[in-house]
Amino acid sequence: MSVLQNGDVFPTFTIAAVGGGVIELPHDLAGAYGVVLLYRGSWCPYCNAQIAAFSRATEALAKLPVKVVALSVDDELTSSAFAQKHGIRFPLGHSADVDAIAAVTGAYTHDHPKYFQSTGFVLDPEGRVITAVYSSEAIGRLVPDDVAGFVQYVKSH
Image (cartoon, rainbow, N blue to C red):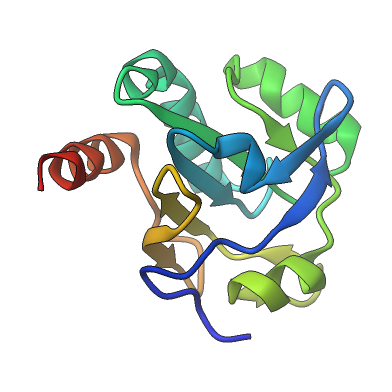
């Protein structure tokens, strides 16, 4: 699959969630603007900064309303420790099947070891992509202030 374009319906997939249960995308974001963050892993300093920033912005984003989910290849134990370290206040997926998710989203990946390169999507309340940010390496990613400003812009036009 190639990259997702604006207007495309975000692909449907399910991933295990930290703390139990699953995250069903895009279903779990329905009715609000959604942010889906594919991050490299808990070891990545840029990912730590991004995910922590989105966690700090959870209340402000919820007022727009924007729901956030993030996922990586990290196993449940590593993802749980990552969530606790940053006080993550949105659903965090773990043990992602990189090849399967990259096939439907167009995300760049790293092969050895296997992980996503930073990829972020903003979805409208119906689950359609309204912007996507694809990085082929460590830098270049969505940040909460940009998402908030973009959603406010979209809502006003």
